[in-house]
Image (cartoon, rainbow over all chains, first blue to last red; front, side):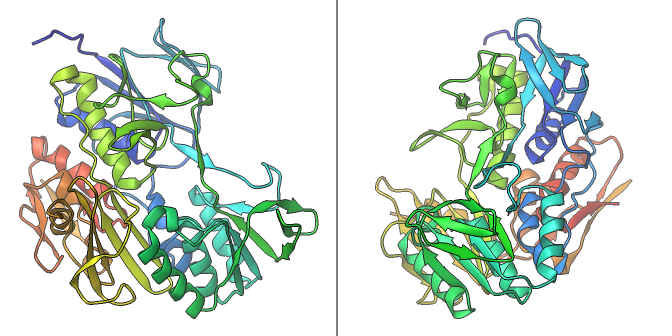
Length: 376
Length: 65
């Protein structure tokens, strides 16, 4: 047993699900000291996955149940600097907050094709989603740049709203996320519903509302939406000495150092395929639970054992997946015989663990996890 | 006393609540959420778990009343 300094004042920077779950985790682990959570957005924490799904399509709720952890919430204020020696965070309203333990959960923001002042919309926050929904309701012609799950969900919502929609894809949609089999199935569903898929690499946006591709061609649309990835919000840590090659890397317990942990989209975590960010809702929750415990218990806290869970809803297909994607090769069918309809599939990775995927089939996620683990 | 309340039409069976609070709720074989404990006394340690479990639901199908 090693004695660690148990903090009495913990500061959480970031009011998304990672920050909120860290607060819950700290209280669940018995922390009854002073707890403050600071968020850059003026809003209470909300469900980010809902923004590109139910919220865009039928106005489903993005609101989360209110917290029970009794932290002091400071909203609409962003952290701008961290001094790890004096244990002090500078905020953009000019004030400072001190801590004995710090949780970094500042998340990430949308990468933009044309910069901050471009006409494109992107989707990261509730406000982004509300603006996008309102614009789609006027049935503009839409071009979506980016063929990851987010771009595909937005394209699906555009079609549902009655828009003509084009997707600019720099490769087969979601190939790098899901693998060939599921990429093919989702692309077929998208095209069958009327999506135009243009294979090409977007270079930028011109003044006349056109997306310019690297081959020189351009695609005009009333509305341009980019979904080309996210950038971690770690600039405020630039002078802190915590970044490694620009990344906020944590150990297997979410620690950057003994008195500082990080979780969620801002953090790069150890995975079987190296240290990388896993910007998923379920990953943020898992990371935050581990990090909260490590801040209190140090090496006695359990390590992160990430078994990612991912879901998407688009073009009439509802997918739930457990395990480390993408899934290479052909699946074994545990239910059904085609990914185009109700099915449960399993892929086995080299090494034994695997991926289990349910399409248009309701299944308990713990059961799906067992199927992924039982592969091989 | 607090009560865990489920909005059943909204539940999509993601099961993140079960992973946070397996002693309070679970998904059955059909993927339907079963609340094993509904009433939770104020100040009990289970209330922290219940609060965390209702909040991780990405479709806001759970609440504490």
